Amino acid sequence: MSSFYEEEFPVQLMSHSVHETLMFTQDEIEELFSLINQPVNSSSPESGSQGSNRAVYSTCERKIRRMQSNRESARRSRWRKKRHVENLNNDLNRLKMENQELKNQLGLTMQYNLILSAENERLKSESMSLLARLSDLYRTLEIIISQ
Image 1: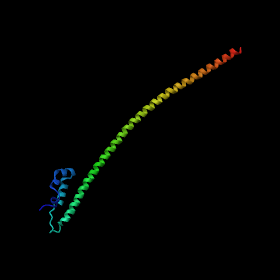
Image 2: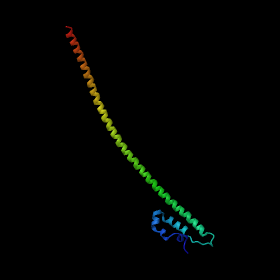
Image 3: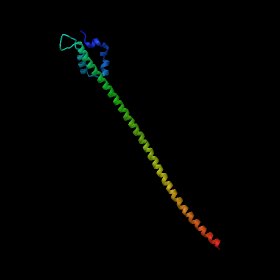
């Protein structure tokens, strides 16, 4: 007598690659097959009918699909998190470099400001000296003209 699973699904679904893809432990696989491969016996009240075996299989199948979907969702979530962390690290490195460039520009600007301030003070002093000399020249000219 063949089991419900063997009747409904090709044997190739039971290949080793399916087990690797789903990543079940050996105990989980054996438990699933024991539920799926129970013989159909309509005379025994405990075994139920073929319809109830289908319901059991559907429940198991849903559980398997749900587990597989959850694994895939978790994988995508880990991938998104990894990309997010990489993007944050890239932003951090970019901002550190930009910050260093701004600090360098600020240092150069402050240095230039000191140079310009010193030049400004020198020019103010020279201007005052020239104004004093011009004032002396006006006074000398007035004396010469008044004589």
